[in-house]
Image (cartoon, rainbow, N blue to C red; front, side):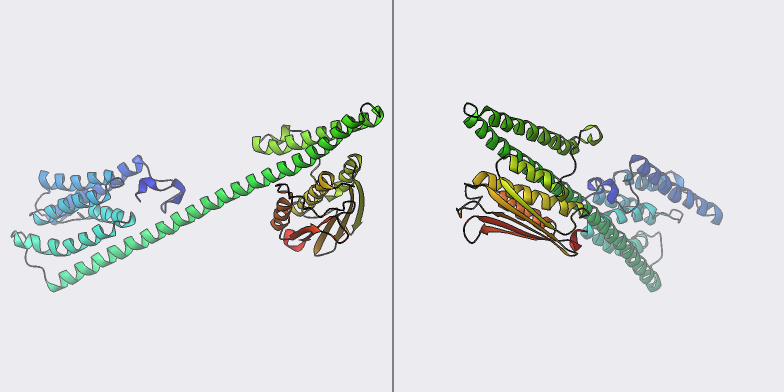
Length: 390
């Protein structure tokens, strides 16, 4: 991976990736160190002047750094050659290794460790001996060789530390990005679940009431009129809730009319709608349900709603008992279809109502079980822990 592939937030030297201006500034600083520093050292010690050739070699190594992001290994080779050429000629000594150090660090940081190690080996051999072989310097002493080896080892170790830190920062950035993607996926799933539960319940009631209206429109117009009125009220409420949910996707929540947030305190409304649609519901609540955690409150409401929808869809004699039990630790829910003599699962026709309810319960750390009850009918039982949802 090269620096160009790194996200801005993932770089160890700051919150944004250094751009072209940074690279030009780096080249200027390196050139100033190499050329200005070496010329100053020569002037102070009365040595031979830098000359045009020396300036060109040092400038070429610095200018090559402009391309170190795209071609790090090639830039290392160029700076290695220009620096070695300068070192082998009878030119004044000074801080001429700045470009080579920067190029070497770039190679290590971007993961080209083999090229970096080869440059160390070649440098350890060539820099002490090539000037001696061309007659411009005396043979290196053992102390010089050991010192050079220690300096090269320290340079490699420092570059490895920077590389390791950079990789940790990159891994952290990837982890944050993955977490953000998971959060988006979870939010989409939550919205899809809300849409499913709201639409499925409303359409079921509308379907039932439409059937009643068609059946009684000639024989009992008053009852048919009441069924149509129920359809109007239910569809209006559903539209408000759907606009509220879709408003989250449009990010215009403040401009969207909202229905009250579904929760167990609205159970009487849900029971009344079910009764109007023809399901005789008995509600039995024991415990405080008006200050439940929001996510658990919504999950419990949707479980009861889906269970009553299944009763309305599948029961041949729709009659249901809804029991809610709340204590300090657990919220218990039981919805029993007492009127049906059938043992058929509500999902037997290929639906996913029970699976959706189980996902609801699991999302707040609870569990849900659904199946035939003794004496016929069907029952849904759920236990939702209050402690893990607070």
